[in-house]
Amino acid sequence: MINFTNGPLIMQGACTSLILWLLALCISTSLGTIIGVLQSGYIPCPLGIRLLLNGVTRVLRGIPFYLQLLIMYFVIPLCTGCSLSAFTASVVALGLCSSAYVGQIICGGIQAYDQSLWEMTQLLGYSRYQAMRYLVLPQVFRKNLLALSGEVDQLIKTTAVCSTIGVLDLMGVTRNIIAREMNPVSMYLLTAVLFLGISTGWHVFVGWLQRRISYAKA
Image: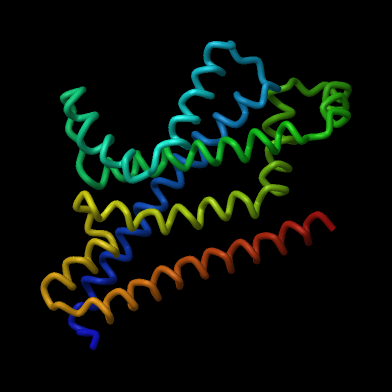
């Protein structure tokens, strides 16, 4: 049975998960967009920086997120002497890991952009920076909305891993309640339903956004 007196604690954990998700999403989308634009080759970028970005994104995509989280929380403070709270380490680790995947999506979308349209923007007097900002990126986000929304959806579910370093998010609160009351079945099922509700809400929003974009395009 679910103890309803735990309701405020569970809601607090859910709010923490949402805040964690939104902050990591800000890092992911902004940094991922920059990475994608620079890796695409359509904006002048020194070869050394491009090779560095390729190496960093390869590392972020090749190492499991759980290990990245442990490195961010334990290893980096030991090497730098700058301690991070569990929440801050989780936000940074989530944002960096997701940005590597967002960057790949953005880069692929830019490289798939019709070359003739690039030439048209030059004829209209746009610089490459202006064309990227006002013409290319909006279309890349629109055409790759489903791929980007899938990465965002995965991000909210990955927040559950952060409870392993002590973050009292939805999963962290669930673990604490189970340890205290020994009711794993009901609590795990409730947590699963809450995560499913958040994910469903996100997909409903993306569906609405797709319809708005299609309507505006028509």
